[in-house]
Image (cartoon, rainbow, N blue to C red):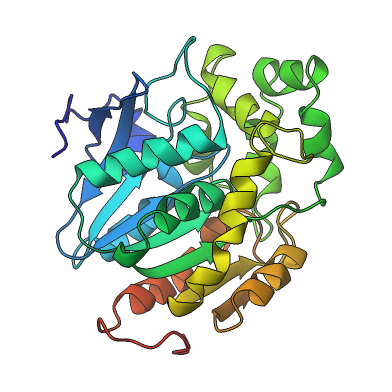
Length: 311
């Protein structure tokens, strides 16, 4: 069982706390650092895994939508959100992230779960789930990849450079800061929402994980996380027996429709919900519709069929 380090609500600014009205729990993992996570509601577990440079704040409205009937578990990766920010001694690799998430989930003694993933949360969450496949009931995939691909936006590639990239991402907040503008397409984020996304990443040291996530994108066979990503990719065909929904923003500057189409080849029975005008932060552009779709998706009977259409 999980032994909570603390369940106290962090001192968030009032405007952000109003949008994120939760009391995160904390668990010290075997990596030596504390992970913050939401554990809201009761019932069948729905695990939501964020990417970079977001945190559990990304799923705040999904939690509100589901918590009356489901147990919503939403971790912040180590160094992200309200989790501990290591100064040293943490690997910042895909394999470490998968192990962190798996350790948290195993400690919560969950018999079965649904999984929702976005951005880097795709490889991390699916990597965790493939190791616990009998427990995975349903999977919702939002603008992400869990396979090797050569396409990477030039601006992200530039942020990977050892010196200039670190200065841009950690020094000038050129990744999280720009994402708060570029990741939505329908209208700018309201000020409190933008501040909520950026709150954990207010200084050079607090943006270390943001930069390390960018560095950990495996674009070559010699990269430290390449083999782990290949392992995850090789397991994707086993998900064909799992009900899957592809929920996609069509104006994502990073995970374009090219990635959605690759998912469709891996998982041809997946239900596809394509929001043509939504950006990378698709929950901000089409939040109400997507929350309704997710509530419908996870609310099917235990023996629901994979190709059941969502409306």
